[in-house]
Amino acid sequence: MEVRQHHRIFGILRFLLPEERLMLNATRYLAYCFVLSFLFCLLYVGVTKGTVYQDPLHLQYMLMSLGLAYLVQFVQSQTMLSVVFAVMLTTLVKLFTQLYGWPISERAVGGLNLSYLIAYGICIQQLMQLKKQYKPRQ
Image 1 (cartoon, rainbow, N blue to C red):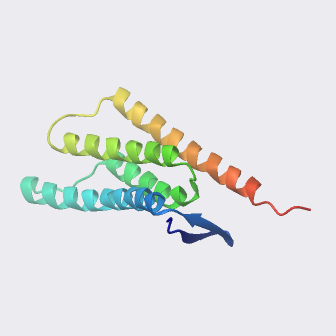
Image 2: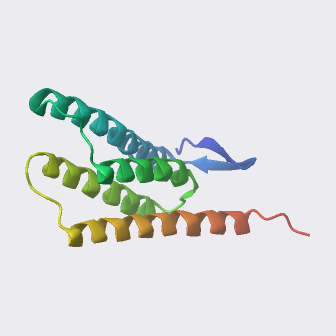
Image 3: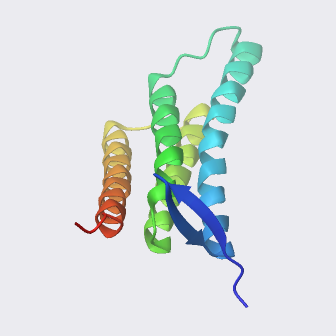
């Protein structure tokens, strides 16, 4: 027996299965981990090096991940949601390896930016599909 939870988008009632909610929540929590990782880096660099942590890439990816955390509620496909999750997880791992001495090359930054662009494109495409699907019939 499927237990569905309703989810309201633009006043439209959408039903989510438990496994859909799990992946949606995991993606959102991963975005919140970006904020925690930024705060961790501020503390870690402040204690170990005595300076303020200033990494514009970390801040950029943190803000983009928070934007994705909001937009993933419109994604209907579990495959697309998994792609967004993988993009965010890859970036978070890459940022932590940079903290421990492995620099991020310009090529890797370009790849991460492209992956975020694709993730945003997926969310926007799903939003347009949802809007068209629930457009009132005239």
